[in-house]
View (cartoon, rainbow, N blue to C red):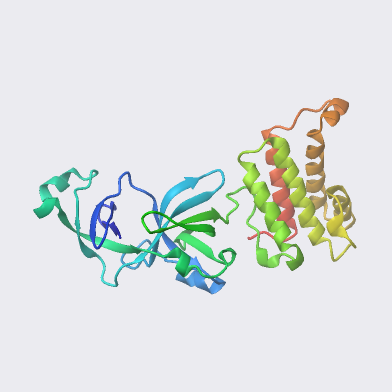
Length: 296
């Protein structure tokens, strides 16, 4: 079980309402499992432990790949808090004065049982969204995998569904169904590369994403638009008087050319730098917004 002191916000763990301190403290968030858009109403409005139904305990977070690993716990009882017997907490020196029989301290804690993720997440994992936080401040995650660890708990691997500011959030329901997977996969590639790849690689991924987005967007207007390169798609945008799209695409193409050694030698231009990669990201984001596929 997981026990949380509502006053000091220190954590304990152990069997049947007996516990030892979790120290150093880990990040623990309110969690909600979404299986449909209507489930957003279940996201808590505030961090009230007395009403909390599900918690996520973070064991590991990688800020580059935006992957979190941790365990879920669900409400142990409708009667919260509960009486626990715990060992003195190293962060609370005053605990030493409260030690009673058996070297334990009686405390009122909010209790949560380990949650069997594998049993409760029966649907295809790609269709489930995990919300961490409350309505006014939350992040969205998808489940990558679940493994049973030596404690008998399910360790769940989550990946962020947010673009973390690299690109605008994409409204997937607005994407053409035939291109949805390709667009979202390309967005994911850009976001993953943005924090760790070379400027040339980031620009290349932006070029791929922009070509996929514009190919899908102009598909109903121009035959085989989805098979055209970014230069051709920029010309289509020009003909349609979509000049912001046109010029954003042309800038990405120019930056892409600068990554080629023969172009650098021929035109005397410098190798792309971080600022050039940032410009490519901004142009790709502009294209997504201009075709109307960004969350406002």
